[in-house]
Length: 289
Image (tube, rainbow, N blue to C red):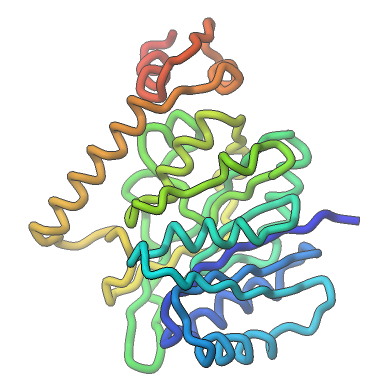
């Protein structure tokens, strides 16, 4: 019997329920079973939780597909996006772990592919690709304009260490290969919390990028500006300042996070050095050493 995949879905605004239903519909039609959807919501009232539960349970008629709603009730952090992921993980029971935001979708074969790759490679985390889709937002519907070419594309770990090209739902984790304490998001971060996690996690555990180029879902970039990090267009002075501060913060992470000797060996380095950082590893690989 296959081992369970837990998919943690973040949801913060009940007014976006139609988008959540589309997201969950894509999970209902996954070929992989058993699957558990852990819906982590942000400070919902009892009536909002019930409204959400009713909307979603009518989509599910499969004993190997379950859904669990968990609510972040604390006042802090105000922006609980990282706390929601941690809350979801605290309620996860399956071997395999994946993440998804309420406004994105997965293709039917997504988790079958990534779990098979995890099993075949023995890696702790496996990456695939997702399409970036431009959506125009109207009062009563979303209109898909078409696919957007990302500004940064990569194929492996060194590319990821340089910059993020792997959205939240493009990877899955084998919890049997990790310590649960290492699967944690920094609750202080409200931008690129997923990239900060990946830098720390992939510096410790072996990763696999063999499915890069195989698209397993859509990341929807919306015209109403509701995405955390803009993928194009003219930025305000405030947004530019935020992105500059974020870039500095990520570089601090690279310069302070140590890379395990196993990961160094996986990158083909001729000599492993205890205590070496992500930035130092990137520089060594770039120099060919």
